[in-house]
Length: 242
Image (cartoon, rainbow, N blue to C red; front, side, top):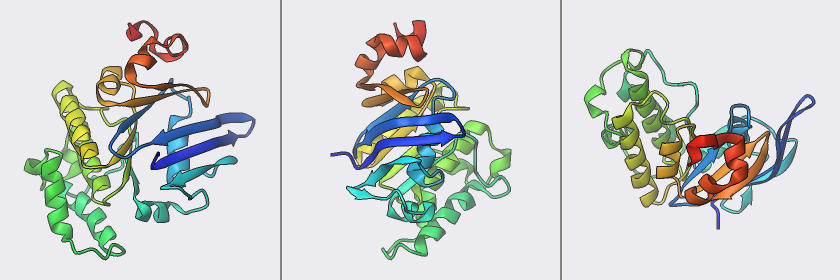
């Protein structure tokens, strides 16, 4: 059973349907991909899941409960965390302090026994950037800053992690490292839903992929099925589907 589900989600912006009956399921222990052309509705769906966008119809279910009416901060406390397509790190703070801010926020409501400082240091090491912990994020390369944002999202101890273009700005070696990191995270039971345009990254990392076109899910399945789907090739993958 999916840990996170969207059921028949509809979002309209004026006369435009950004999402039309969008159904997606995200399971624990799995990296799930969400792909599609620019403007297909991927980020809009992320915003519905996290509570930043109210749907015109449909529901969001988390662990079997309807959370459609819950605020973004309550969803975060339930265990839904995300990164953004446009980098949202605090550029004037160090990498360590960026992650520490999230860990200390979590301390305000999470009554489990943990040290925010230890969480921040452990996560910086886990994503591979402990050596730049004291650098201001504004001075870091975009790819490294994205890893700071990822560590900050993980500091909330999520059950579901939504990643919007996680490989953007990463070089080939960093992208391979990101893929390995995500596989490690889901092996610990985390559920990951990622939006991504790097098809080699998606096909090599995701177990299940959903394809959006004009707000509708036109295909869903494992990578091999998606690559061979004529509708997906026509809509998005083109000759790269090969």
